Structures are given as C-alpha cells and as structure tokens.
Image (cartoon, rainbow, N blue to C red; front, top):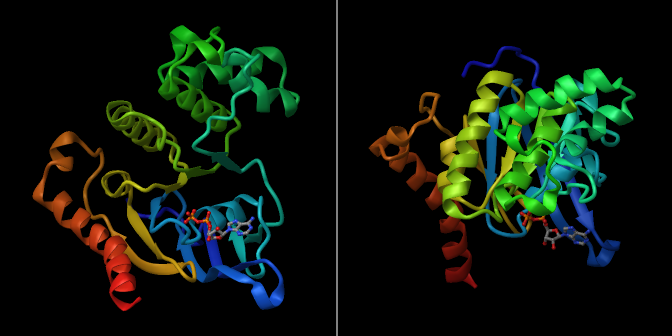
Length: 265
Ligand code: ADP
C-alpha cells in the first residue's frame, strides 16, 4: 500500500530505555529510529528480550523513555491517548460484563449516550464475527473469541493506531490463521496504522507491509524487510515461492543473530 500521508504516523527518534541504576543499568533499547507511515501495517520480530514490548509500551505511553522521543502525528507521546489502542496477549476483558458491555466500555467512559454506544458496539461486534455472542459473558467464550472481543473493544474506541503485543500468541494454529485473516480484513476496511509484535515469522510476513527485525543485547533495530506481496493476502500467497523467499530472509535475520552470538560466546 502507498502511504497516504508523508508525515509519519509514528516516529521513534533515538528512543533509548535503560532499566536499573546507573552502574548496573541495563540497556533494553538502544537508539531506536523508525518511522511508520499512516495506514501502514508493520510487524516486529526478534529474539526474546530485544526490546519489542518496551518499544511498544513507550509508543503506547505506558513506559517512559530514558532518551529520545516518540512522535505520534508529529506530537511527542507523554502518556496513553485515545488515538492509540493497545491489545496484549492476555485479553483484558471485564469478566462480569457481556461482550457488548465490554465493547461499549470505552464509549461509556467517553460519555456517549446508550443508543450511540449500541450502534458503534454492534458494528464492531459484527465485524469480528461475534454477533451471536453479544450478550455472552467472557467465561463462555473460547480464547479466540475473547481476543476478537478485545479487538472489537479496541476498534470501537476509534483509535487511529493499533498497538498489538503478541495478540494471537495464546491461540491454537487454526484459530490463529483465522484471526490473521480477520485482522487483515478489518484493517483493509478501516485503515488503521498497526504495529504488531509476534514470535511467529510466518505471521509477521503474512500480515505486514514491512517486517521490523530487532536484535538483543542491547535491544536495537537490526533490519527492515519490505514485504512486496499484494493484499488481500490469501492462502495462495502464503504458499507461494515469493512468500517463502521473504520468510527465509526474515528467518535468517532473526535466527542468524543467535547463531552468531552462540558461536562467538
Ligand atoms: P521483548 O518484548 O523483545 O521480549 P522486552 O521489551 O520485554 O523484550 O524486554 C527487553 C529487556 O528489558 C529484557 O531483558 C527485559 O528483561 C528488560 N526489562 C523489560 N522491562 C523491565 C523492567 N520493568 N525492569 C527491568 N528490566 C526490564
């Protein structure tokens, strides 16, 4: 997809994060520079501990930087904001609220009247395929359905950016593939900017315009791999030699770091 707007939607500028006290400080993220275009879908991969979640939490406004800054629409991030929806691996649904009440939650906080809340909630519940479960409580839903409910809730709040940290990590393989297709379908209709962390190289390539590969010790940007495959992504694309070629590039970029580290340690 061609970016619509030339100003980056999200701009990481020399973003550095240390944890701990000065002499023992641990460098979790070292001068991350990265621009993400409006409407872009980027996935982020890399070995465990390379700072993926730290970078996302900084963009979400949930973690401070030690140095550098993140701009969203040209403005520095100083905390969470309604234009950024965050989805974690653990679906944080309120167990005592139904699917519809969960999806309406943010809208209620914004003070929307009941009829408007219902219209918006129904639209997104429908979009994620939970129409028949709108009045169900989370405990009666499967993991995939709970996560779809969390996605509907994030979408209903109308963020222009979705920050997703291994959102499908806990799902079985088949549900995961369905969720990927559903997310892409939603993205192509709604055109949010998506930053999606995953451990799964196939998932990273299948979803993205670009795959951001990070490296560890210290956490840093390693490589950016463009995915020049058309949307909609289909099973045919997933099984194509072009897909395999890009997946192999990403795989090498992620796992070669480890073998280099091992061979020199
Ligand atoms: P990833 O998401 O790539 O697995 P994280 O961003 O979670 O990596 O973590 C990067 C590094 O920073 C890890 O070594 C982790 O242990 C460390 N780290 C993350 N959060 C904290 C924290 N609150 N206090 C201390 N160290 C942390």
